[in-house]
Image 1 (cartoon, rainbow, N blue to C red):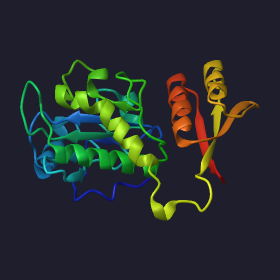
Image 2: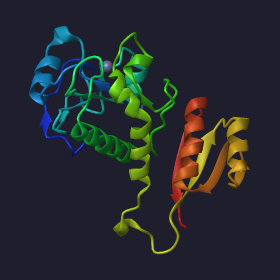
Image 3: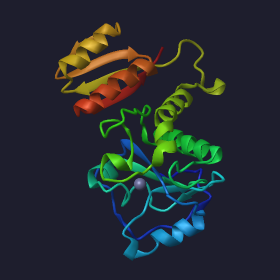
Length: 242
Ligand SMILES: [Zn+2]
């Protein structure tokens, strides 16, 4: 498991479990409730007495720091279940209560980090449902906390959309000579609802012990993947020619 090449500062916290017990399937965005530099955040999570950490933190200028390797579980969201499968990110606030504003530079860095985490860990994108069934999650879903604050919470749907849009963008040099790559999806224990949706989308469905769905565009794949996540159905995808 690799870490983001976008980091410009590293200080690994002792507050973590090594290794994480689950593959990376989610990203959890937090607010710092303060305007900490990466160095100040690093000093904070270096203290064992603080009992907290995060995989990454982002300062108001958009600089990204690593505080817990992706291979390890951070102590961040008051939920071992979430944190074992999430990359957690603390984002600095350039404004205080009640809105807890976040700078545009920090937002842009968060989106770039999410895209990078998805690409390196094989996540097809992020789903925002407003609760813990989505793959973009927040602290308030697991504990009585205002985190990530009204401003950042109001941006979550847009962040997921923007991350998915950038992931779907095929760079000119990556463009295949003929048709765009389609994905063949394998959903183990697919629910009737997932099968019906795939058929609705006009996708070939072959039922064996698992549901082989596709070839599907990345948009259709996102839909099926989101439903598989929600149903707890293991999901695998592979790319096929044309
Ligand atoms: Zn939080």
